[in-house]
Image (cartoon, rainbow over all chains, first blue to last red):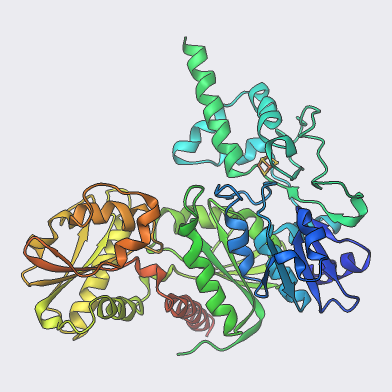
Length: 222
Length: 274
Ligand code: SF4
């Protein structure tokens, strides 16, 4: 199934949310509105509550680059998407382009998962192919990595993604709010949202692994 | 030769990206936008080493079976020869990866059409200035680690010198090796000097480090003023008139070079199978 087909089937089956974005469409999916979940009431007002209207899907890049407080969102699963905008699009293709900028590859990963074609990358594999200064990340202990998942991932730490990876093929993640998270932030039934998937640890997680590895090595020396 | 449309294929523009500086990936998105507007490919995507979507997730981005991968990099080197092939799972110029065909093109910076781009940028940054009284300096990082980026710049210098553009002198210069960009005034026999950084994006090198080495800025400045660096031409310094350009990769016409690399790939492939 193509990504476009997956997207249109899902919308027709009642999916209307991805991450912090509400997707509102008409039946023929040629009038589409994207809005931050917290701005849904504003968007319903006659003057659209003063939200700034965008009609170019490429605007999604600028809208998703910085959080409200100016933090650079290089990991797009962060639950700090800016508010105050509304995007009006007129085709499925435009919608897909916008969503690919808001949540890169999210739809493609879901479509592949649905067909059993999604390949997961476990943490050890990811760490073992780090180079340069991140090479050091690979020496992190299992316990250190398990602890990091609790400290870095999950909505308590502003990440909305559902973790699919394990430490390695035989070592699953210890149960925690983060490891168990659905990938669907906010209050919505699961069948109405696209979950955000984490198929490999992000660069932020790898950078944190490196710090823990170093601390572990220092402790061993002390 | 203009590229024939490929309505069934996808184009992947591959960049480095940054976890600290969002400006670093802006040119890649701009180039993708420009190419998308021309309607030559069914899909155009960017993917990055340090940003999302990652190289490993790129496979999932597209519905197309055939994908052209163009490294939006300035030279051959570690990234284009090791990292990108490894992360994508490429095995040669054309690779079949889980049912999709990937064509791996050469990086933009080594294409001969970069010469035209550099000349255009040099003219734009110093409008109305006679090349005969001007030294053109193409500058890069230059370290022992990546000889190829130095070579890419030297090749461009030779091509510009041979192009008949009429510059009194064309030279390369580097942040960390001879000839040093910090000594630009000694490298230039002329009163006018145009400096074009041979990088894809305006990162710390082009808006902080090089301006300090040139003497435009007293010290590595605040990121907030980064764009200003390129607006204050010309600079009257060390008895000369200096024009400083933003990174060559930020040039809109770099989109043409990306397409040139795709066309070259096809031409090489046609030759190989002829
Ligand atoms: S590794 Fe953790 S923090 Fe990073 S994207 Fe995945 S779930 Fe989020």
